[in-house]
Image 1 (cartoon, rainbow, N blue to C red):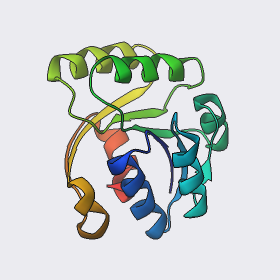
Image 2: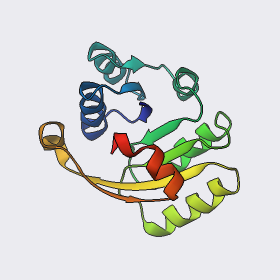
Image 3: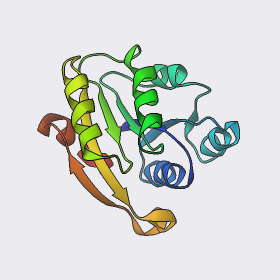
Length: 149
């Protein structure tokens, strides 16, 4: 399966690496070119922008966001919107406030885009041990990405 990972900090980078090791195709973007290079060195596809990241993926796409809660998630979603289509999935893997999650899900549903909330825990040990994921979202979208979870 393939995935676009946005945010290649400690957790995002380790999650991407674990997915690559599991045989998944991972394209990634981060504001830090060094983080993108590290992903490419591990066998992922490094993207220089969110737009480029989306182009690497085949529709329907899964884009996993691992950026700080609040404004950064909203800004990332706003950037993605003009590049995504009906049936695509946006995953928020951070610890967003549930009110923000409900608002985002409603806004995206109106555009035909699925929103899946995956509260993720595991810290830097997740790479070796795996992650604890609390998944919520449309059944169709969650089932489609089951192999990633």
